[in-house]
Amino acid sequence: MPITILAPRPSRPTRKHPQEDASVTSDTDSEAGGVDLDGDLPMTTTRPSKRARLNTTTTQSTAAFEIVTPGEIITDDPQWMRGHGTYVTPSTTAITSSVAGTMTRTNKLLSVRPLRARYTPEVGDLVVGRIVEVQAKRWRVDVGSTQLASLPLSAINLPGGILRKRTETDELQIRTFFAEGDLLVAEVQQLFADGGAVLHTRSLKYGKLRNGVFVAVSGTGGGGGVVRSRRQVWTMEAANGGGLVDVVLGVNGYVWISKHVETPEAGADSSSSSKAAAGITNMEESVSTTMYSSQNDRIEVEAMREIARLRGVVTALVENGLRVDEDMVVRGYHEAVEMAMVSAEGPDDIYLGGERGQQLAAALRGA
Figure (cartoon, rainbow, N blue to C red):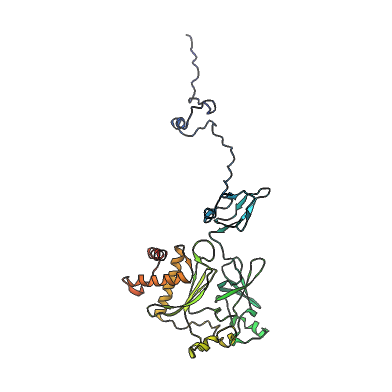
């Protein structure tokens, strides 16, 4: 009996290469079952380089507030100079971003401001810090920077305003001035090459902080937070019988809100001559021996409530991306007081989170 040998049948239909048949489209791939596995698509192609984000025709309005990511090429035009947050790859002219942030342009200088970064000290900045270490002739202060700041013993006022050279006795009693955990407000006096800062408290508005609450928010950088302004320290009249409240906005993002305490000299004589005694010339005469006291004074319930309300205002401003300065804090506080008046709880309603915080921010934006 003869045997018939049949030709082998292919397991699946053969497909032509796109270069052989130009009529093959993406529709045929979908009908055949999706992705082509016959090697029609090159799998070893190199990743295309990022397109240039800036060229000679880019205006300042389009370049501002543009978000870039690390490793993204901003431009390869050699007319631009690189600034902070950028680098240039060797043997090329391409300026590449090294951080994630907003791109800014100053003339022909390109820089990237990070969205989140630690505080970078500058001479003249008013900062709020915490003592973390006591050494022989100085204190180490945490100001939210990459390094601890230094407060020398010679950069503070001695009790009673005595002007003399610091002795070994002062070094032995260094913890009677500031101890670990104490909060203080100071000014940046000097910067080292490695970014370290030297502080001083040789002023009546600087020194140890007490009778208040500490708030840590974002400092100078991208987004909302404390910004450098004309005045970082002020005293305001609180509503609902809260009395006077002091607000200290540290440029490093640390905020201190406390009850205002009158000095003995100001309480005894409120004339203009007494106020003039607090100037730089007669500063030593107004320094009290209680300036380094760690004992808090008695604070009334009304004052504590308004201090907590101010703290909620500062937190709401930061959470909603608004700047924190004297104008915004004062406006936000008055708006928060009005919101509490229409609330069922009355003045005791100090909550400003969630939707209430968004309502407060919307009122400030619309004002």
